[in-house]
Image 1 (cartoon, rainbow, N blue to C red):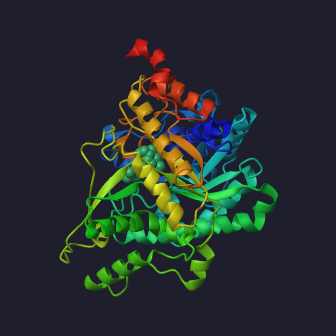
Image 2 (image 1 turned 90 degrees about the vertical axis):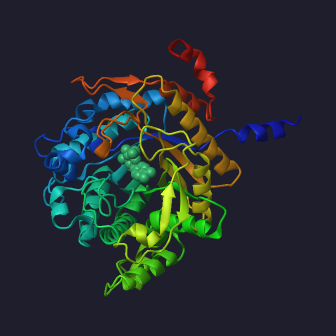
Image 3 (image 1 turned 45 degrees about the vertical axis):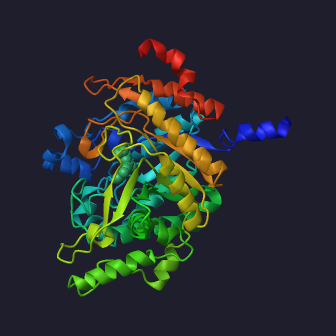
Length: 488
Ligand code: PNW
């Protein structure tokens, strides 16, 4: 028994000293206060009103968790967890009501200023997502993320955020996720032009991110000394069998889902992944298009975008199984056709409330290793990970989920030497879950949505996560179960 050996054994079960723990939310999902003076309309305001049938119970985020009025209480909840940082997003249309930089809403600025100061006064680091799916309506009306000028307007918006908040904010996430709602019908703006709109959006988003990054480099980094990155969907795609075609199909899925965003920014060579380029070019030709549906980056753009990161944010919830599919030329244009796969999940994996969310923690570890190998070992922050249910206060399944996924992250850190620097639980509290409205709950805190006061109550997972953070290790459920017994 040497002391060193015991330390080593112990350390494998611990998070590194400088590892950061956090908790997340996003503006439209929690803030409410959509109808206050000076606030502009965004695509969620617009579509929840004009297409209420798209949303569970026709619900909307007009009030949501009312965080616009209750942010000081929210900060108390965050503080109670003992986390290092709070990841929240700024509502673009609250700061710039029309999306453009000529009209700044003072009340909007004041809100985020107050929130940032309240966090810092409580020893919590603010981590800001600049864009979490909530595009100002006027920008949608000029084509949204299919309009290349959005990259310029995003740069202007970024400038305003860096200028007003950059003295105190040291972690910036330009974008959350990707082009949801451009290639399917399950998300605003419900464009549903698969194989076309999502690829254009993809390119514009990547360019907009790069513009914001370069702006920070040129004008803010020296003084503010923060970090800028992007958050991407980091769900894992696992081959459905050992067959070579299925192994290749899973790799194709990763490149089409994550690689199209990550490759231009994080891959040493930049640009869209080669396999994506080839397939979309070929299939576009077969389909009779006179040009590829996948936009091209010029050589200057490839260089401009490549390397524009200080860290990579990953939202990782689940795993999909992938099988190769038959080529079917008669099928109409879509990115699914381009990828040519069948995607499914194993019915044996425990299912959460959300239709897409099944528990397979090894996917987290595999994704982290894949990203490390593919993109030259970047600094990674898990910016979302969480479990949905009906909102039970005794949320044993959520604790089990977190326990398993955090163990997978520890393995990635200690066994695979992946450079994971932080972890963020989604979400601080139950909130507006996009088209699912208030029917799926991801919160550590329960919110009573029929109470005008939107009362918050800690779930059992709060106790558990607090202990994890305090002790910097994955706490077993039985270690908090004495306190749970009365409830079980
Ligand atoms: C996240 N998938 O996105 C969002 O960033 C959050 O706003 C949201 O509340 C959370 O998911 C829970 O739904 C995801 O296809 C998008 O597996 C897609 C997937 C998962 C999460």
